[in-house]
Image (tube, rainbow, N blue to C red; front, side, top):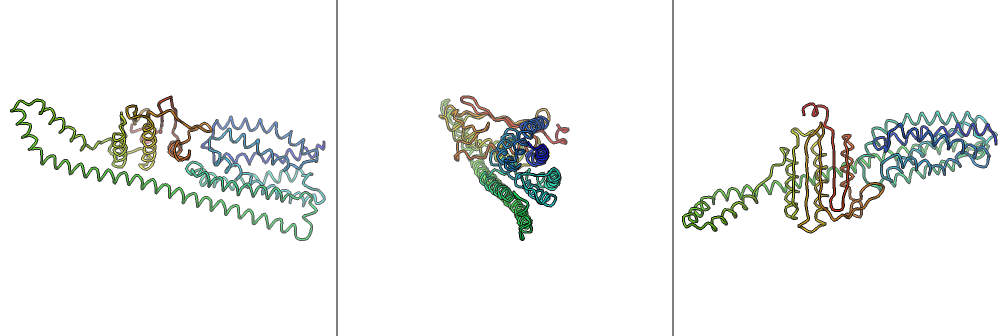
Length: 445
């Protein structure tokens, strides 16, 4: 085994450090373990992998890239274990890192060819290895801001698997193309205009990659804006329906006030005749009419109150027994639209779950209150016990498993550094949400 080649290959594999950081930067909100523990695991894996891979490359049968490429499955396995994102988003981040880091690799081969023109990829020098590491670190610094401010929010909010898969395919294609562009013999770079074409092609491909990610980000923002508008329209429709219902109740109340004198006269006649049964029946009918015209006040916020009334009426229509205790602070500690989305998805899913059972078994309990400087939202509803779980999470039993209600609730909880927990028993489904109050609200409470 060539020791100098072993050392140069080991140095070349140091590029794993900036590559791993580029993977974890946009996904740091979704780590399954503490960063320190993930770091220790990565270091342990590197201490095992680098010597073994370097020994294999030092036999001169395989280049470092030929060893490195199939090893991506191992690295993705570690990334999959350490990050709680779904598969489409994990693939996107991982393959994007591979695509970008393939460019310093190719430039380092050109640098090695300039230093050692009679060598080749199987004899990659130590100088070129550190040159590659330096370029990779510079690229990491250049991409840190977009990772933090552009793609980190997208990973949290964009739930369109097809979009993530499409972007992953392009990144994979770029990585494979750059792998095939590695010059096995540096002499080929001195043939005609091969060297010039080598740099021109890579420059064009790098610009195309940046343009692709810029367009991807723009498209994702448009999709999110469209989804947000659809959600806003949905809640506006709910408010409009509640407004019309309130108008109808007001009209009924005016009619009841107008007819009240007739009711008093009827009650007086029944009392004089001693018809207690008729008196009770008339009072019962009058109470029912009052209940039908009642508009509940669950909270002081008009939009949220309309939302609660909308789902409360749906629950009553479906024969669902409700036990709601709602105590929202005023003013609201979080944006109105986020609370509408959180509670709307929760109630919609709960009502759907209840309706999988016979009417006499339907029940929905909801508690919303401020406790210990946090907003607690606790829901439990009866359901038929049928759930679909995948990768440690719940899949919707509607829309072919592509429902986004739970994912949306989880996203909003993560947005405010809160907790979101879903569980179930044989006949009950539980959702627990904890949203820490902003500092000013915490002090007020």
